[in-house]
Amino acid sequence: MNASRIEHDFLGERAIPADAYYGIQTLRALENFHITGIPLKAEPLFVQALAYVKKGAALANRDLGVLDATLAGHIAQACDRVATGELDNQFLTDMIQGGAGTSVNMNANEVIANVALELMGKPKGQYEFCHPNNHVNCSQSTNDAYPTAFRIALNNKLQSYRDALAELADAFAAKGEEFRNVLKMGRTQLQDAVPMSMGDEFKAFATNLREELLRIDDSRRLISEINMGATAIGTRVNAPEGYAELVTQHLRDITGLDLVLAGDLIEATYDTGAYVQLSGVLKRTAVKLSKICNDLRLLSSGPRTGINEINLPPLQPGSSIMPGKVNPVVPEVVNQTAFYVIGADLTVTMAAEAGQLQLNVMEPVISFALFTSISYMTNAAHTLREKCVVGITANAKHAEDLVRNSVGIVTQLNPVLGYEAAAEIAKEALRTGKSVYQIAVTERQLLSQAKWDEIFTFENLIRPHFIQ
Image (cartoon, rainbow, N blue to C red; front, side, top):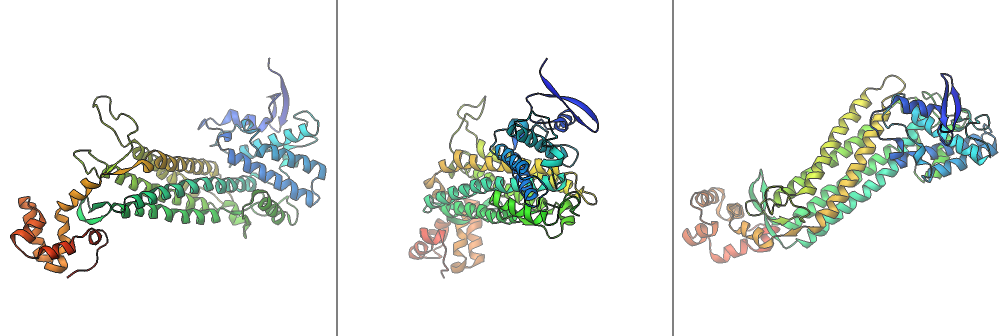
């Protein structure tokens, strides 16, 4: 039989694997929650943030004389080891669980306590020397430790996402510069509209995404407000005077984040509005990114029977039956990622609404939804940039031919000929298949060749100025 140790809680005794750093409450969670199959260790930034929270608490308790300085030092050292990721494989509770995150909090408390015992030269489980609740969780509740760690982890995870989105926007901007002299037809309602530069179209994609960087920054400021020191419901029960302010300062120093203690800890302990806001930002960006991918698929459609103004990098054969077919697989996978994130936003919304009285017990599913959405959006941004955008090429001649043969260019004649005359030219062009030039200049002689040339220069087509 495998070696084990016996631990107890107020429900009874259980055998714990001798080499495990987790304890009995983590074991009970492993037995009770089989939902996602995704353990806490899958979010290493969350594990790291839990270690930061426990270290900040130990230092504040030391400073206030609540914990012995030597014991607090061992706890802090244990937290440092956990924060490196060395013990991630001990964080095994399912990401979605009942209990408002108590199992996650106790998983951290037990691992840190046993690492501290090891540093003290004591066997795992000898909690009289360092206890998960009495010492590691001193002056805390799950209800302030869990959301504080969650917000720290979100802040750090959002930085990587922001970087990925910024790099994607930069890639679109670079293509905008590359395609600045490519003439193409702009379209509204999938119909020919007026000419434009393909460069401006791609620069607009960049601008569209860069707006989202500001929204991410706004969200990070919101989730930088923490309720550490609130303990169970915000009344600071079991926390010494000045603890909340002191632990917040320690956490600022440990994390390097501009964390702020909430002004109303009772409100902050149940409020999940910042998560709803962040989820909405993720959804907003997902919608924008999906729209851009729709455009890339349309612009590359064909190649011979579609718009075919751009070429996406060919990555893999597109059909098991149609030879030579290549599909826009990267925009397609980003579309699907966006659909998932949009759905996850509803999960966050319903979970935030489902809170009662002084606590929202649904925070585990909120954390799972937000962590997953941020990861998926980060991966989508990287994939779209690396596998698609940087390799896009323009079919410049074909795009210009579409403009020259389009009825849409008749709009440029409105100031010269008037709307009614221009509409008549368009109607005849559509009916007969003749070009606008042939009808307006050659047949009807409504304007001279010189005037036509002045109106339809490349510069005036992509950056129109008023001509009469």
